[in-house]
Amino acid sequence: MAEDDRDELTYADAGVDIEASEAATAALLDVVGEGEGDYAGLLDIGDRYLALATDGVGTKLLVASALSDYSTVGIDCIAMNVNDLVAAGVRPVAFVDYLAVDDPDERFAEQVGEGLARGAELADVELVGGETAVMPEVVRELDLAGTCAGLAAKGGVFDGTARPGDALVGWRSSGIHSNGLTLAREATTREHDYTDPAPFPDYDTLGEALLEPTRIYTDLLDPMRDHGVRGAAHVTGGGWTNLTRLGDRRYVVDDPFDPQPVFDFVRSAGNVPDEEMYRTFNMGTGFVAAVDPDAAEPLAAATGGRVIGRVEDGNGSGTVAVRGLKL
Image (cartoon, rainbow, N blue to C red; front, side, top):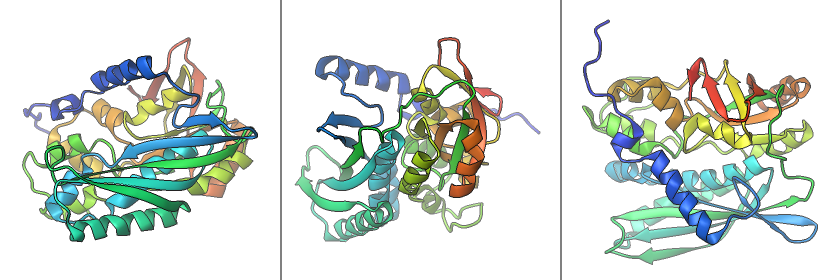
C-alpha cells in the first residue's frame, strides 16, 4: 500500500489543544476552588449528596447547522450531562437547558426542544426549566448547554478509584458522541461535504453519521451498584485517557468494542494517527467500569457489556494502553 503523503491531522491542528485546555481549567480551579467529586460536583446535604454536572453540545452544532437538522442535539446535551453523573454513581433527576441564539428561530427551537424531550425520556429525568438568550454579538446562530442535578445516598456514590487486579467492563457507544467533533469535522471536510453519501451502511450522508446522538447510560447505574463497581469512566473529551481519572494505575484494554465505520472514515479522511484517534474519541466504547474480576462477567452479561481489559499497578503514574497503543 502506498504511503499517505498528506499531512497528519491532530486535534490541536484542528483547533483544540487538550493540554492548553487542561491548563486553563486548572487555572480556573486554582481561583474558585474545586468541590468533592470528579465527573460531578458533590454537595453534602445531610444523609445524601446533591450532585451537579454541566456540559454542552459543542461543535457538533455546526454539523447540525450545515444540514439544517437540530432534531438530535438535545439528546446529546442531556446525554453528556447525565452520563457524567452516572460515572460518579449518582442518579440524575432534573435538567435545565441554556439555549443562546443570535436570532430567534421557531424552526430550530422546536427541533432542539424535541431532542431535549426525547433525551429526558431516555435518561428518565425531568426537564424543570431553561433559558433562551438572544445575543447576536456573542454567538453565531446558536449554542446549547445544560446542567443536570442528581441525588445519591452517602454510600451510593462510587469510590472512584480502581485497584490493581480489577477487571474493566465496557459498553458500546453509538458512534462519535458529542466530543472531538472539531477534529471529525476538519477531517471530513478536507475532501468531502457533509451531504456526501456515507461510504458505509446505516447512514445516507456523512453528516448524518456525525450527528448520531450520544448514547445515554443511566440504565447501567443500578447494575453497576449491584455488582460492586468501584469507579466508572465516561469516555468523552480526552478519549481513552479518561480512564486515568480512576487513579494512577496502568489500564490495559486489549478487547474493546470495534470502532464503528465512521471512525475509520475520519482516520482515513484526515490521515489522523491511531494514537490521536484514541486520545480524542471513544472509538466504539463509550463507558467503562472497574470492578472486582469475579463480578466482571456477571455485570457484563446483565447489561450487554463485555470485559475489555484489566487494571495493573501504575507505579505512581496513570497510563492507558489500548490494543497496544500507549496513550
